[in-house]
Amino acid sequence: MKKYLIAFGVGVVLAALGLGAYLQFGSAASANLPTVTVYKSPTCNCCSKWVTHLEENGFEVNVDSRMNMQPVKQQLGVPGGLASCHTATVGGYVVEGHVPAQDVKRLLSKTPEVRGIGVPGMPIGSPGMERGNQVEPYSVMSFTAAGDTSVFATYGQQ
Image (cartoon, rainbow, N blue to C red; front, side, top):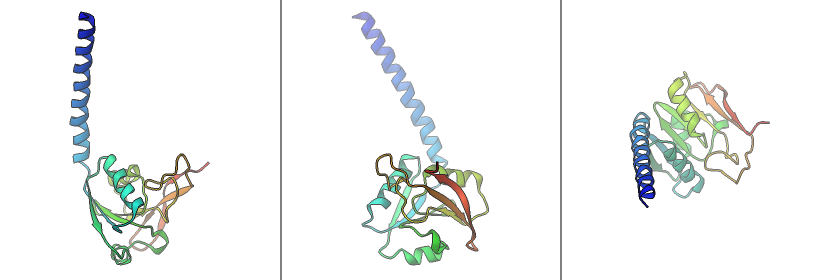
């Protein structure tokens, strides 16, 4: 019984240390990320799932529900060919559609001279559009204020 109590006590201490490290470093990592403002329809479920994806990856998110997203996209300079269901701003950049959080973080750390990044449409397997293990090939595109685009990342490619 004594060995069990010692092992249990060591386990509790290790768990507490692990939780402490997570809270310390997890909070610090999140504190360094700027807040994301997401403009979305109040009834769009996949947009809400994308917001959750960002939060699970350390971002604080403010949601601004809009019935008409077109004026937001025009004001922020989203090229028509990159349009999706929601638009976000973070750290001076525009993020259009179902962009993986890792690409938002890479955008913020690399600070390229672009207006933003986006995933055109709503490809299956992108964050917020999950359907089991299915991933439709898609690209995250960067875009400039002039509307020029280039591939930022690709997913689901063979």
